[in-house]
Length: 298
Image 1 (cartoon, rainbow, N blue to C red):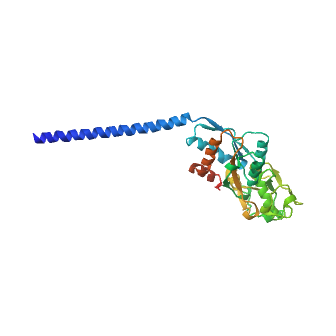
Image 2 (image 1 turned 60 degrees about the horizontal axis):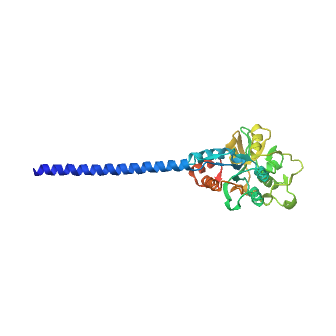
Image 3 (image 1 turned 180 degrees about the vertical axis):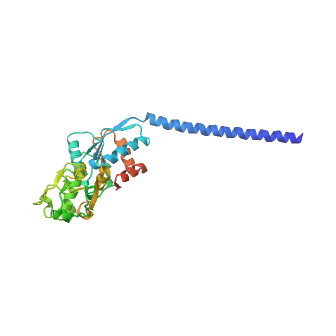
């Protein structure tokens, strides 16, 4: 009798424990379901927002991928208007003419300085986002290698650079001034390299480079073989293909290549724009994409 009673007690205890485990499991499952429902509700109730980005031409491929990744990474309420990829000078002109944007990313500090001076951006939101390098490229399979600034000065190659509205062109002009190919004028007269703006000067007699309105177009001139070499960013080699690096422009011959970003003063979506700007710099997904396309985080 005692043994039977003991057996019944053990069975009762086991049943009680099983019931407790089931209750905990149900509770955990319920909490998990509630958390999932809460997250879904948050995403569903988040107000739809459309962001307009103005970005330097050289960012086009990378930015398209970053924007898609941002939406997938829990920001399904965000859409991007037709992002404008232009030279930094053109982007400032568009803002000055009344075009709307939430975020401006320039390819040079001087262009962002102008945007801040003209009141196009909120200076308090400004941040340096990326770094880049200036390189000399030629058509793939050209056979050229170790091309230097002095080679350009010696007239060995035809070349293409961006015009004054293109930061890559300004950096190229700064570098070319150190070998006498580009002649600074005005406040820059008598100076060379990183001490000049790379604007408002002229090319020395005997030099007639092809000029174009974006670094992308400059790269295409080398890609097609219109010119022997062109001055572009490292990221453009990843972006376009069809060209190969045949020389690196010494970093001490031009200003540091930095891409600043800032929220515009007219933005109607400041909070959402700041969240995107932060994600661009801090998200591992974003960092992988920038690096994939040849950009270094500043």
